[in-house]
Image (spheres, rainbow, N blue to C red):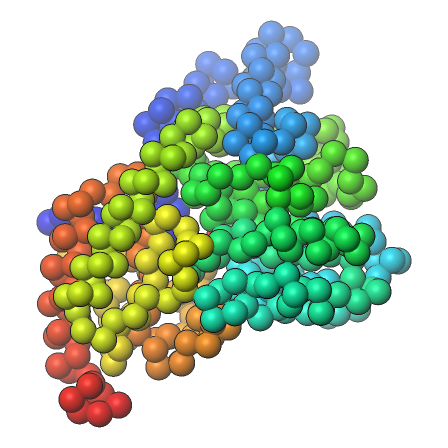
Length: 389
Ligand SMILES: *Cc1c(COP(=O)(O)O)cnc(C)c1O
């Protein structure tokens, strides 16, 4: 059976070149980068190069990039760090209602500990408008956190404009760029953000390594106490192979960015065109204008996305409903809910995300199987266009 992976927003395979650079850090280059003898210095060189490569992908200085254990950790650190450092200045945080759970759960925790959080609502297209942010700011606001690219519907948020609004009021700005990294060009100085979260496994690097960009000069608390690793801000002997892999993945992402975007968009558009033309009662959620190049979030009316997912899986095709992080819960997607998609439509939604290893044949295989699966499920469905909703 053919295997077609179409869930690149959940994770990506580690590229061959990335793995090749990682392996020596398990074997001959096993030294601790904090050690002063030669194997330690060799490891330190690998660490420095990785930091340069990751900072190079976002236009930062390498001293502004701090490695973490994952994107979620970077998100937690950013929010908790600002809350802790500036709690005397104010107790109000602004975020959006379509953030990743790593942001939302952290904000909910803070709400239980004396903070007030405003969750901005997006427009129907998924975009958070600068005027919506402007209205939510109070004298007590210390932080705004809005994601650069949404993981479910792929909307690219106007972060530069949002950060400008925050900056004009002297408020710090964090963005979760985990889905954006390697999928849209990022110049962190252009964006004007103070903090930015990243993760390796969404850009063909290994799982279990992320990074937080912390703008030079920002007062910001340390995260793990211990040794002097990560410029004293996050202690613990480094995940060397993981960090080196992140660095290589970042280098490849930078060199191949326009090619990656063109390839993903072409295949994603082919999928959307075929599905909407060949399968009746299908709707694409989110805007096509500002969108992750590989994201297709599609509603199939009258049937359950979960059923589609399972039947596609039986054909060797991997997709998701909502996001990987919430797909095990039966709660309707908080993102589609915020976009105003009716609940029965949300239940019929599937997210397809393509990437560098997706081919035209993959798209055609998925569409062929989808046609059969959707027809079969609709026949069994108690509601349909003919039967009446
Ligand atoms: C995947 C993802 C994360 C979490 O990153 P991990 O490295 O898996 O912890 C955070 N935010 C967004 C938008 C994501 O897509």
